[in-house]
Image (cartoon, rainbow, N blue to C red; front, side, top):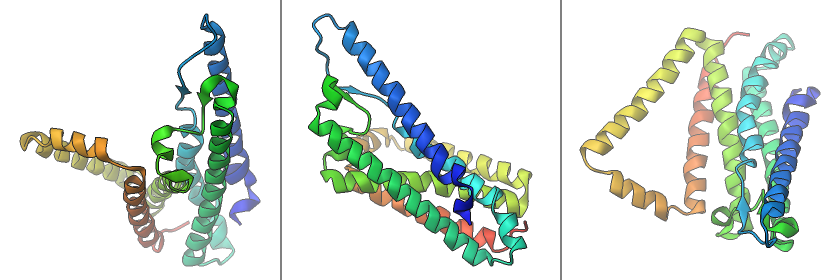
Length: 225
């Protein structure tokens, strides 16, 4: 049912990915031409984040566009939830495979011949391509889970509770920052960030995925179309 509207899960992610890739390569090409001796340091851009974070919108649309229709078809909330998350897992995996193939090509061609990298980022790939795939996948699912979670809160409780929940999360973050400051924990936090390895980040993001996915299901069970 989710793939009946291929724009949300297929066409838009591909359009965003292709556009970000093309623009990044054009910028790399301009920089290469601008260097007098024709040589540049490796060039890395942030454009590759665009399709990953688009999954935030995918999570919102997956509920807002399809949930009322699913209830009209007498599909249970559990079936809708499992089917939607299965679709998100498949599309996130396809996107991650695309990033993996692109990164391997960039490594083999020295950044498309002019040292420009869109898919390949050294820190992410330091612990083998498999870890890079897992990190791309968990980040895409994290973005989807946040969007889906927010949409379930909106459906269940309305706009006021959605805003209140967002404000509460911000206040928690501010409180944590305050406590870290009071106890002079920023140096230790900085060392932890510096020492963080990709596989460790995969574990952290995956745990957050489970938390948002679980709370989304509990909220969806009582949501009305």
